[in-house]
Length: 380
Image (cartoon, rainbow, N blue to C red):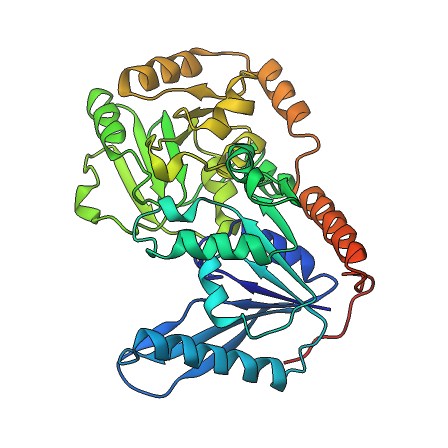
């Protein structure tokens, strides 16, 4: 069986929930990852297909900038139909991260429709005006819905009768490397301690004022910020000698950076765009053995804050107090043992397995094929 994933995030942007899950589905099934289109000043419309890894192909529509909104939808529908015909895509499941993809898929006949609602996208900056309406439509059409956290599940559970919360998980083996690595990256190794670190997308959720004030009040502390800057003007980012913006780094490089951090940060604003998020970086930081200071994001406070696994701070004074307490700690064995016990059953493999169980139950109820059995040969 094929899995066709429609995503608002590009495969090579930041390695996160879609990539983790699609990589696991690809162990047994062919995956086509459909990106949003690139618009170009000249040329004809076409589908670019690239093999991302074994059994996963990333499909990117290329369209002329001159196309009207209706023509954009029409051409994507036509290109998608050609893709299915050319590669004999039959017995397939549609997996949505963006409800906007309904515009280009409602003429197709999948065995099943899954909506993995990883965020409340309508609250994000530059969200399309019609996104809420398209999500309501997707809820009506979907056979199965997952949410990216418990707070989002509570907000959405009334919208579907087959919906389950699946907070983002971790690759413990990958991030636990940070506990034993001794060689730091060249652009970090020369920094004096303590080092406070963040990796992720730097956008409208990032509390630039908090970072500015803490860095100003504590000039002897260094702050390493890793990730792309999007949807905000880079000029608003605070510039201090002790703040180091390193840009985007590969997923494989993150443990090496984490190995040199004294404290990891989740400095997010409390607003509509962060109301329902469940930051994947929380368990990743912890798996790396790095203490965490986070703002009071609901899905961080519960369960991590209430279990005293992370510090919660919403302003500079609270952040500094938590940081000074953490830096003064001399024995972290008890904390680390509690972290490891808490994370014991948290993994992307287990999340994928539980999702697969719900998928096959739903397919069984629809009297359709089982989703996965043995690995199929793949071709493009």
